[in-house]
Amino acid sequence: MYKLFFHLFFKRMDPEAAHHLAFAWIRLAARVPVLRTFAAAVLAPRFRELRTEALGLRMHGPFGLAAGFDKNAVGIDGMAMLGFDHVEIGTVTARPQPGNPKKRLFRLVADRALINRMGFNNEGSAAVAARLAARREVFRTTVGVNIGKTKVVPEAEAVADYVTSTERLAAHADYLVVNVSSPNTPGLRNLQATESLRPLLTAVRDAADRTVTDRRVPLLVKIAPDLADEDVDAVADLAVELGLDGIIATNTTIRREGLASPADLASETGGLSGAPLGDRSLEVLRRLYARVGDRITLVGVGGIETAEDAWQRILAGATLVQGYSALVYEGPFYARAIHKGLAARLAASPYASLAEAVGAGHRNRKDTPA
Ligand SMILES: Cc1cc2nc3c(=O)[nH]c(=O)nc-3n(C[C@H](O)[C@H](O)[C@H](O)COP(=O)(O)O)c2cc1C
Image 1 (cartoon, protein in one colour):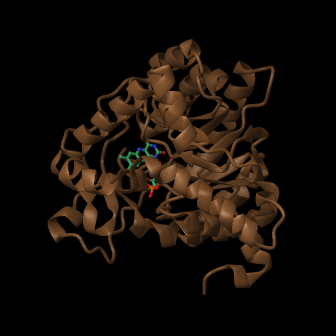
Image 2 (cartoon, rainbow, N blue to C red; image 1 turned 45 degrees about the vertical axis):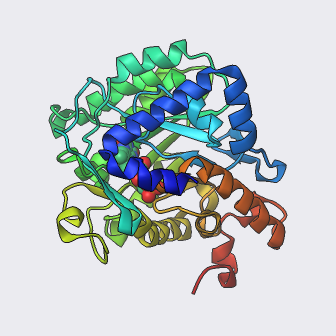
Image 3 (cartoon, rainbow, N blue to C red; image 1 turned 90 degrees about the horizontal axis):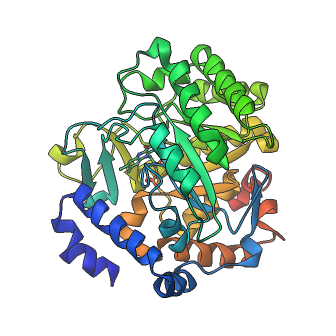
């Protein structure tokens, strides 16, 4: 049904316009009590066995919405209504900014992928903090806040920019993410080098602790799939050393191998997400788990389309999993399909709980694909 609708309607629209239209419908539905109760009953079934404790937080399940869909925190309840167990808003920058000129989002239908060079279009951390402070929660859900650097701020002043956003947003965040992995802000990914990352994460940690004194806000870092393996290891070691709570692997890739889409589309500048990203994201996750084990919470994201994909990330070491691009292709039943499939896989597995399955692929290699 959705697939037919997608091909007849959304596919003919500009991808960014389609996003805004679909998101407006979701938000509208979430404002009508009867409609949202019905939609949530159908799309967000709760499975006891999928209940997840991560980052010191209790969640209905492990599957959440990746950053970038709700950049300004305008539709958290709408996305919870669609069955996402956590919603990561942002990326939010200290100053409001328009992002890159349009057109900046492309659909690679043949690859079930997207390329985006949005460039952190967002209303800025002051406006987003005010919105989160005023929010009246309809569906209880975990809200992650993902922060990044304002484009016009030079790299040398990046720390202060992240600290400003932390001071404004930490109080409203169930967890906070330092995004240093978007390919669309010049120089941003240089902050992944440990010489830059160490002072950045230390300053954000201090700012969060200064601002929020009644609890410890979990802090995560989101990394790129294009890091060399040694750099993945270096970030993992740094995360352990600094007592970071989690690592999100991964953001979009600038690589373009093996795409079926026409060359002019596949060569658009920006970050590639969706199905073609899956293998590398899984590889980075596996490497991280081999390095840090359960000392740090790992979040798997990139090319997760099916429950099987999500299950493989859990076996590879992810406590939480996220998706974005497949929502465009799979439609509103995406999260429900992941939940149902995960519950079935868990029931058919030798593990008593989802927590027991996390990283089990490393302990029992027959659980991982050859
Ligand atoms: C249009 C678009 C915008 C995105 N914006 C952000 C962002 O602002 N911050 C961020 O950390 N990741 C952003 N991402 C990356 C996603 O959060 C995710 O890491 C990536 O898309 C891989 O997951 P997927 O294959 O399920 O889409 C964006 C992705 C897309 C497609």
